[in-house]
Length: 245
Image (cartoon, rainbow, N blue to C red; front, side, top):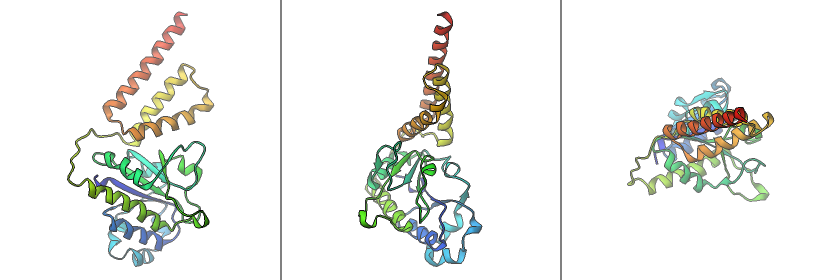
């Protein structure tokens, strides 16, 4: 696993000290890339540094974005942390399962893990911007975790996974980013819509399905192009048969 390709995204954090504690948790586990959905001016830098201690360099290099989609557009997968199992979310991975999934991807691509606001967590709309969900089991009587503790738990599993693989070399193909994958998904949806596979109202769900599936598969550029070719040809043949009929 390439830890430099693990991206921690904080979505709308409120407390500056929590951001500092997250930086320290990341440093404990060899993670360096922090992205924040929000504005840097919203945070008290002094309070961030108080809890970041010797990990303040992570804060100094942090990047700020307007949305999760923007923050993760160069990543291959985007895992949102949540305790809630949505109707369309499918299976929620455990931290160790996420570490295993990220392991193969981060050799040549980036994997993002998203953590929500301290009070509300990730909203449904924000989770929809992610390609998979991950959950940290905790007692139902007090299920809420401190933001930095949640980051620490998942980062620790990722770090442990990297230690078990440090002598293994992988030379797999380079997976496409979510930004590039969106082109393939749009092409699939366009072609399926042309042949009347679904109504216009069902397009968003169809795109979400393909994004989630293909993101987990970590497809290469060649595979993405081949998938596009298949759906383009299928739509063309369907149109030809319709005209002949």
